[in-house]
Length: 144
Image (cartoon, rainbow, N blue to C red; front, side, top):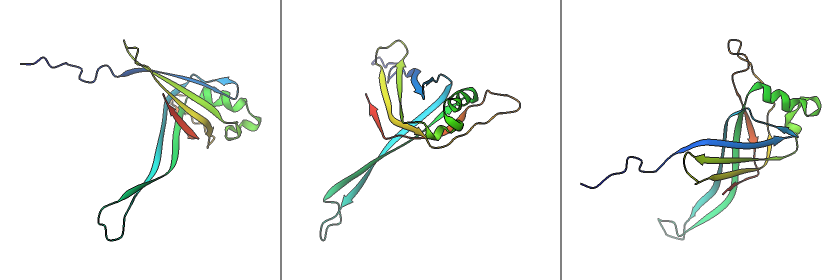
């Protein structure tokens, strides 16, 4: 009988290091970050064909969000006039993902990112411990 490896796909990512500087404020209290891109695609049909004869590719759109602890949101709000984080100039978010005990590092850069909402929330029972999810506008994503 053949030896079957226990970890078929190897070690999963176990650490994410986000390098984020927003309006001169280093941000460390990130509990989650999400980003995705989609590309428009459409099948093209020819005269009398039941099946596609070609495919058209269109725009690439991106979307994402970041979950920050209230203390981080407050610090960012203090860095801008009137606390309006939606008026902060575009910034990049660099994510470095590292599998434990491996040198197979993945880098993802969210380019020209902006906040689309200004928010803060507090949980009365767990004051300051709950993160707030804020949507992001992202121009493009570099997958390295």
